[in-house]
Length: 288
Length: 282
Image (cartoon, rainbow over all chains, first blue to last red):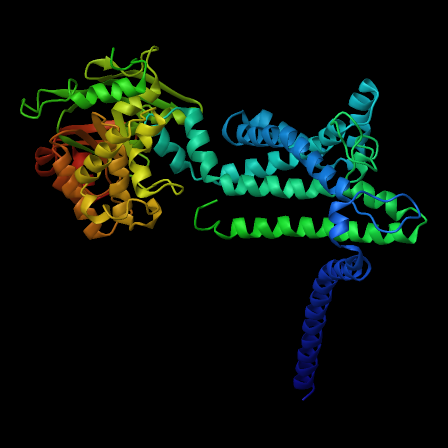
């Protein structure tokens, strides 16, 4: 009698433990998604009313004048991403291919480790480094300096993703091409990289989305600009910088514009991620 | 030697297309040799995979390499077109002559060797980013052939030779990976044939296929030997008996016995060969 009731107690306790554990994981899962929902909700409430045609087509208005937009910052961000891409994409992709296809195990593990260290460096550090290397030397904040800072952040990101997807290409394809008498580099470019192209493009897009939202490395490289930038060797506006400037200002109208800018930025990053999803959906079918 | 160090790929491919290097089918097959392998040894790092193997491979015949797993069959096959060099830290000794020319001479480019000695792998591996048609002519394309008419002719010829043309002629634009396993393997054979090699090496080409697809490939091998020298590795004794003219039995990297397939299978001179063929080990 006692024994059977003890077993029942034990059984109840186990049920409770089970319920507790599954509730705990469920709550954690909700907590993961909640901030994203909160961010979007907040941005929509505060920013949606200021996102209009003027926002995308007009320069900022002087203090005290209502209206105006962030056209220069949106275009500036795109210009900075283009410069960053020119620097970061070739170096990152070719470096990743080198790690996956050539190189000795020893050197590769060192490069891989250093790339991971670089990935962990706070982004403001890149801003300081580029400030010292470029801005001080040429005595001017510039789009080049901002693009360089972002490009340097992109390199280790792209390097690691490229390496991973190139390693995923089955060896049979390399062998098949080499057995046809195709040279090593043609095999790598036309067979291996082509097979891994979706993965490589995904890595590039994610890196662009990541640096597109960076503010710290631009603070003393691109510096920001309230007008159109007419030369890449001059300071240039960028969306995150403009948001930063407006958010810490004392003006209500600027605050609304900052919310709108943040909404546009987050939507842009979101769109890139959706694009990546679409690109990688056929991944299983085409191997990588 | 001239053939091996030929400068431009297009030149070598087109010249051979006109046929000067084509082995003639009606000479006595037993006397005409494609490969002469002398004292071949191959090491992977410290491990000796092939140990002092010497035998000749006849032209326009099928030579089967048999032996238990890990005996060095695949390594031997790959040493015939220098594919084993893709593994780091390999080393070889001895000589391999292809029509009298040393494949391992310092002036020889391994890519040219592989253009003359094609290969079909155990697992069919059509390129997933390419259509059926592109898969067939990719070897020519990447070796610099641009002439579209020539490519189209070679495409049809290769697919006809691999007995695939009638099945895929209306689907050339479809992905190569959309074909069935057996068709994919024949596509890989067509791809190897398109660069007009002199020899085709096959590394267990049927081991991943069902019996019907296997029968088609075996039939194909018998047809191809009129124009090509074929060396195949197989795990399947019956298959070796059906398709090959000569059989080499390797065990622990050594050549135990080599001879005409009928002799090896009916009257082997070595006890180990007999034990392996009759299924007592391996």
